[in-house]
Image (cartoon, rainbow, N blue to C red; front, side, top):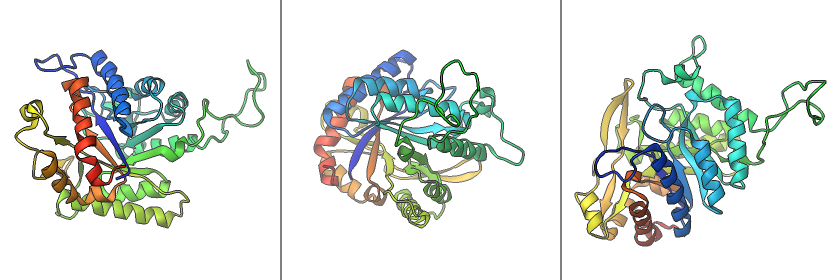
Length: 339
């Protein structure tokens, strides 16, 4: 395990017990958690994107703000729903945020998951082409976005521009060299993982995937990672890809941990149907450090990946999340090979 980051959904609620009571709280606290995580030595700060929900939705202002406040920590998403995105405008936003962070952006993209509203992307002005599904549209948007990150000129310049142009066709600006190598795809199946590999994207695999074999979640996820790496090798890319998995993991080290997670994690996988697709949801982990280490060593997907993203309960506030991350880094991560 080379890298460990956190993944936050940015939940906010005015309900009793929530330390994150508004959208403003969620955003400002996200910045503070990222700063604290960098101080702890954590490798990455990642954020989930959901629309029409009381969670993080527009990632680039948040990523840019964290980039301006930090120096070393990777800053990313896990994931952006590409059904909702204008790939050209997104390329400009991503280039600006990456330059502000001095090349630390790690953008996870995906076709998205079921949302709060029906076909929410329609309200953003997008519609699948004829004979195209919304997932196809997301992948098409992604391919255009990747093309924009190549930095090649494509737009015919005005012969009488307001400002002088460089020679040749124009590209989008600002352009950030190397960002294309730091794009990830959140794959829910082996097939889409292989598709991401052929396009040269890194792989993000969460706690949910298609149930393709009936085996335990971590076994299927490890097989997905191996299939991805084989596809990467077949595609002939020159660089080595990165692979992340996400998990809910809590080390119980004090009475407050016991109050929140003392009943243990969800120790079994669960199976359900999403959009008529049989899907498997991975277990969570909560235990005292020694027992937690033994459980995690049996997780084949964690062993296969190079990056582990820890999902955090952001609505418990900055102080508790900082403590939870520090407990993992201090008591658990070294036994998994981190650092």
